[in-house]
Length: 308
Image (cartoon, rainbow, N blue to C red; front, side, top):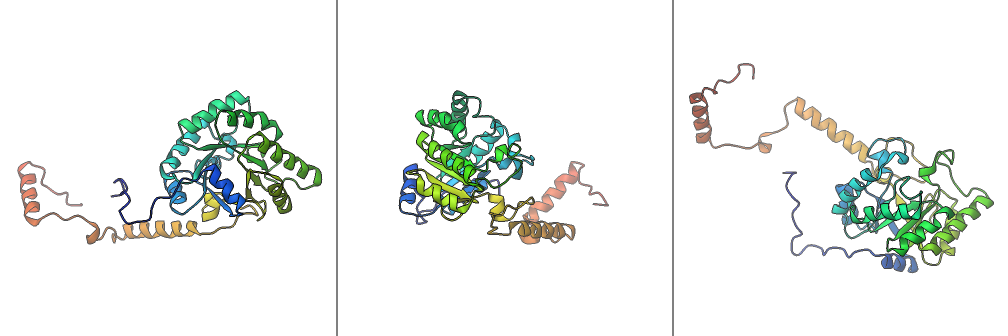
């Protein structure tokens, strides 16, 4: 039954993965081994990241759109985020588990950010938090890391500020704005960020920032192949997102078509009564069935409706 707990690992199967740590990520960076990061929003997607070797599982605030149907990540609340982090954490154990801090949970003050980040770590089970922003977040990153909360920064395109940016546009298009992205990256690393997402910037700038940083690993999404790693949104990778497809998205699967095919086949089988078949139904010993019919008649509940 689908409601039964999962079976525990059987002796002789592959050994569980070792926990991915920040030190391990830095070692991957030093050895020029690309880092994989993928978003997850619930237990099944978290378990998939666990099972298939992803290095970092990101509970992204993109769940606002792909899971909850909001028109923007800014609609997502902290309580909603915590619900999803907990679900992912139950499935994703070995990958480093990073969670986005929702819009408005880290902007008022560093103290406010610490208070909310503690909830994400303690109640949600995240290993680290991710913040979108530049120089204005240096004090916040420094405060978070000083109390032992690892921070992944996020520069370039900042989806939580898409209105102020006049849409989801490439950043660092000219020399001056590119310099601003670089300065933000350097300052956030100095403040203690162990890694940072570089989103929607020229590939040359993504490579340049990666080379200029001393320790922080860069995770690109629309930043070219020269970063230390890559991240994609689950629904973009799987081909289940119905909305706009950004230039940097590559669909590695066509799950949408498989879902459509499966639902249509199921509905057709139900309507033509070919599902469930005999092999998919439970049997009752003939003697017990006859006994049941007798008892039902004796109790006065044995008449079967003629139109049934």
